[in-house]
Image (cartoon, rainbow, N blue to C red):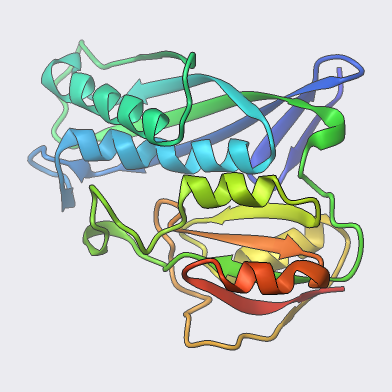
Amino acid sequence: MNIKKVRDLIIISIDEEKAMVIACDSCGSIGNKEYDALKVEPFITGKYGVRVGILEVMAANAQIVTVIDNVCAEMEPTGREIIRGIESELSNAGLTNVALGGSTEENFPAFSTGLGVTVIGIANKKDIKVNSIEKSSVIYSIGVPKVGSELDYYDDKDIFQYNTLKELLSKGRVYEIVPVGSKGILYEAQELARSNSRIFTLECDSNIDVHRSAGPATVAIVCVDEAIEEEIKHIPNSYKIGRIK
């Protein structure tokens, strides 16, 4: 069995044509319990706790089939609301027929909220957008870096959107798409170049902070052929940040 890790993804060969794509994420001290650092409803914990994994697997051009939630709290009421948030985000992403499973903590009381999420997808090997940069290209970031209470939890138009991801995946000269989390835009751009055995050159043409945390993947970077650069410029909150050579 062929298994490889590429950045935050694990890719497992199933047969000659198919591969499994797996992403994981976690969050802690985000909820409405006594010792939570960021006070939000557990619904929001679930909604944004699953977002990163969904975007990572979808960005690889895989079809999500399973989501596993490990809730470090009791089922009632915390776990139930976290699961409702996860289901809401799956719906926002247009995902149906996804098997949802997981576990809760029923033996001991929890005084802060924790959540671990695993997202599993299936992809055609020939279509996977991982380590697929074909030539020198440009890098754009899309979305505004936000974390914690900076987000409008229910309808934030500034952050990277699922419909934008689907639009990008449909374009032939989009080589790779990478969601950005806590390490920031510059880190992910450098990692993208490294994993493709290429070099990233920063050429930022805006005031966007390339070092700032993008929290629950409020930003994605996209590597595209220069021929479609004008199309990318018209996407809301898109900023050219550099080149890969």
